[in-house]
Length: 406
Image 1 (cartoon, rainbow, N blue to C red):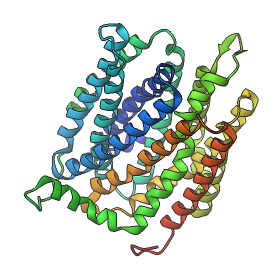
Image 2 (cartoon, rainbow, N blue to C red; image 1 turned 90 degrees about the horizontal axis):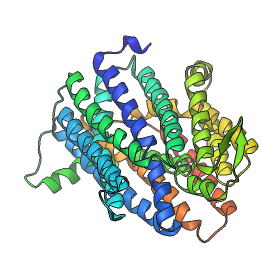
Image 3 (spheres, rainbow, N blue to C red; image 1 turned 45 degrees about the vertical axis):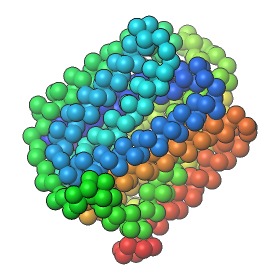
């Protein structure tokens, strides 16, 4: 049970929950808003630019987390994240008139989030033990999905008429959470000794070991490819549903494309909340490798089909299948990959692993750009093929030979 975790683990999980809730009720809907202001191709390029900048921020964040106090890093950049949300709110309030403020706020949100994320991951890894690590990551996965569903629900129903209030409350909540987390976290980390007087050389040296670890690189590439399937839901599929989904009434509630997206996210989370630990007990009795393999195949194919469908009675079963595949594979992958990380390079390895999410974001954003030129069927094929290649790379990396090369 989570109550058996230390105070630091509980505080980190709670803070992570609030962070994810704030993100999910704001940023995906900001992308939809930007797609309405600009065309899909330009919005896709903006998202791709944000991904590249965020990846670089994540690399720097990993270096900072290995060389400075993580508690201070968390407070500074969580506060900056809250400030960027308030900047976006001021644009929606009319105090700022140019749409350029939205782009600036969007970029600063991404940069600040990726500057503190490696410190978050390293704190959680530091505070867990071999005995409770898998359970801690199961709880992190469970709370993350719960926060995403709640956030998408809030964002979906407030998007049309209450954008200013949504971003204002989110910004204030983020600032309050940063202050509260600093007061609750009782943590001091050892820092890596500086090897070069030049900070840039020291940063590059910090990542050289991770970059030379071929097994780790193939794992990160594989995760980037299969995560593209789910990440496309927030970019390409979100924009497509907002434009193509025909409004219908469900239990007297009008459902448009944006609300359909929220409904899918809520369904995903309800399944995660209700069945994470049940499926974990079921898969614990079976081959971990086979569970990850078959789970990822179901996950990838289901999300690929969601990218092309507009019928609610098809979308809902596909989301159920995608969630089952996710529940079978994700917690096992998260726990297994930690075993590949050297203890003295935790933050750097984990920051390097952020390439899997940034890469998935980039590939999903590229799908949005491609959608201006090719049909939805080809986009679905693009998502499924990348996902299956990623599945193969991930499984071979996790269960290949124990040396650095696979």
